Image (cartoon, rainbow, N blue to C red; front, side):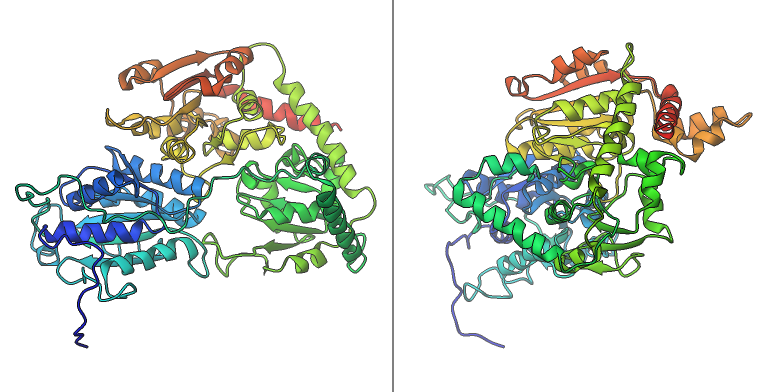
Length: 616
């Protein structure tokens, strides 16, 4: 339909290159809800680079430059994971786009609003053999909440009104809404692909024209809310912080909850399994009803009053032990969040004698209709399902949990070199900064052994969408940039080596403040705890299993740190590790804290723990 209305203009850049004009309108659409963009260098993405630099100069956005696209993507992922707001990563065309795939996959399954912004060759160059040209639109199909392609020369630059649906700015703004508010699957990644034509640089300004860009960029409509630490469910401590009116309101809520208990089934032996990113109200409900909580470290409820320590060892204890008898009594399980860390939990959820339900108040991307348990969105229905426990149900679990924790501590206490489990326990129980837990063994060691309190890490995070070992250090850097404070990353040696480009920063960039604690056991420790460890102990199989799964390495991390110009500190005792972690605000930049351990004794360590729990 033809419109006689004149274009609606807030600024006039009509004399500039069309690629720059399109890029500015893209940035205007992004900056409605985005504060951070990470960009990797490239020629086809140059219009975006120039527009973002102008926007940063105007105070509309914070721009971070990285050399490697994969590291750039995980840095943006860390920013979005921490802030809960969309964060963008910009690349040029070709294989640069493919390097975003791991971060997009993680963002999809973890529900993180990562925005992949990829420059493309114009349509007429596709299919002609043009350099650095591939089919980018749809590259992330099935992994993004939405995607759009803007082609220079076809999309409207000058809107005819403030809400012109065909303008580039409006289309980008609507895509951003899908990243934050996508229906059905919840927040997640989106893909913006843009075909730019030459010229890709700004036109030379006329003589006498101002060098400072026009005020075309705008700041977010929604101010970025400060990230709040997780709510710690310590009843007495919270009550002490309330005034008289608030305490009475809290007591009234408890009385209402108690009255509600009168209307539900009694003597139901239920446990709450809280996995990654569990809704906080699930732990609160468990506490109100008096059911035990089996909480993974990144559930946000590990320090709750009802959280059972060392629960994994209880679940795998033999039937004749205290833990085994308690596990056999479980009738129902309420699952909240996504539990992924232990096979004993998965065996519990699949047991024929146990009825399980998934509490999920909002859409998520990590499962569909094939989830082998019903999904319930209403918390009151969860209350009815869980029922009221018999007297002493929670207290018994907590008592057994404390005894099992004593077994763990006793096995980790011997004088001498630290095991990786003891190092992970100490870091998790010591740091007060936000703490990112690397995938593979590290997060499982924390889950097994660490006692977390409300005075522990400011926030515990991990990349549990797909649980890969790539991008962990980069994600920690993104969290540090988002928070503007020091962050601790606890990773294994292979996870660290897999993301060395996180240390590769352009010399003029802001250096994130990150303590990277590397538990270096010269290879992959997790496989020896799995069935591959059994295979490796068969005659003639040990060498092959070590080569294929242990992947031994002898890299000198001190030399790596020196090459990147990063501080390195080696520690060998608990006291040295505690000293290295002390006073985090007294230093800036990246620092590597290397803890050398021996993975070959871990299987025996875990066996001793299991034997100790079996004897309870």
